Image 1: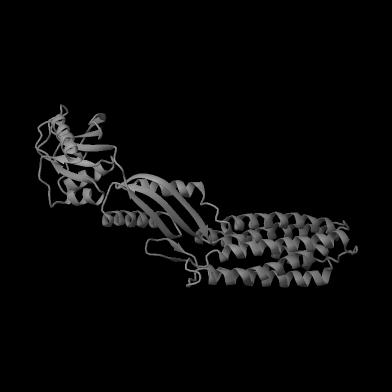
Image 2: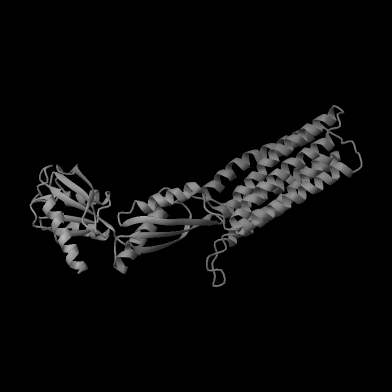
Amino acid sequence: MAEEADGTAVVDVGRWGWYSIAVNVALATIDLGIAVASGSLAVRAELVHNLVDFLAAVGVLVGLKLATRKSKTFPYGLYKLENVIAVVLAVLTFLTAYEIARDALFAAAHRAEVSLWMLAGVVVTTAIPLVFSHFELRAGLAANSPALVADAKEYQAHVFTTGVVFAALLGQWFHLPLDRFAALVIVVVIGKTGWELLSDGMRVLLDASLDAETLRRLREIIAEDPAVVEVLEVTGRNAGRFRFVEAEITVRVRELEQAETVTRRVERRIREEVPYVDRVLIHAEPVRRTHCKYAVPLADTSGVVSEHYGDAPYFALVTVRLSDGTVEEQQIVSNPYLAEEKAKGIRVAEWLLGYKVDVVLSRADVQGRGPVYVLGNAGVELRRTEAATLTEALEEQQRDSEEERQ
């Protein structure tokens, strides 16, 4: 596996498809030799199982090669082709189970011939899928590839079924008629694996939602952006190993260009923190304000407005109902960056954004400086005030709001 610049592993899924074909050829060759020499029904069933898996592995490789291609006919890509392959693999698995069950129930009785080399061969055919499935499953999970994961699960079924075959041959060695019983056990295991593959593949083909944990993480990422006021809806779906995400949000910015900046920023963050996201569609609407949250720098906790911005020891955070100017919530917090020597104003601005403020009032003139751009990119207004106290500053803002409405 290679690595991207950020250290993330990159899985060559196509190469794993070729590996799977090679493993199936090896298993089928060994089983063919044992089946011809022994005449065992259980071994023949496992041989059929391997041949079906060989065809499925070829299909997986084709699916992996074609899945990421896009065209005018398929502008969203052929990602779901991997899930189609997984469903086909499930159907082939059911067919395998049917063939085995038919032979186990209706084929003429036949005593298998067993020798030590046959038992050793079955041990080898147990060890190969055991080791290979471990590494293929890890690669499939790393690549978020349903086709590879499905193939690895099928190899895990092989580990059990070849173990059953070994038990059947060993039983024949001691003259115990376990061949038909072993074949029926293989039917049950294969049927269970096929059902799991079918249900997982159909969920994606029918556009089932992303899992709850991924949706929760997406909502958190979007809500953490300082310009986002509310996350109205987050939905998403899988397509192959990739994810498509849609979200509806309200933002405090009103200019179209600013809204586009916010959505691009949120999209970039989603791609950084959620793997295998192919497309993000975010619909942003300006928030309809019924309340306004002010941040006011204070010289002390009594409510005296500070002459400074970054050097203010305290900030008042006040939520006001716009219709009548009623203060619904008020708290005074200490400035955590008071002792900073560099970029103090920018850090204070970023800190205030965490409180989701709408307006910052300041007696100091910080126009053209870093804090203005930090606050402006989040849709937060920075207003000058000449008020000496917090009460006067809030009354001043209420008067300005009433004049604007008139």
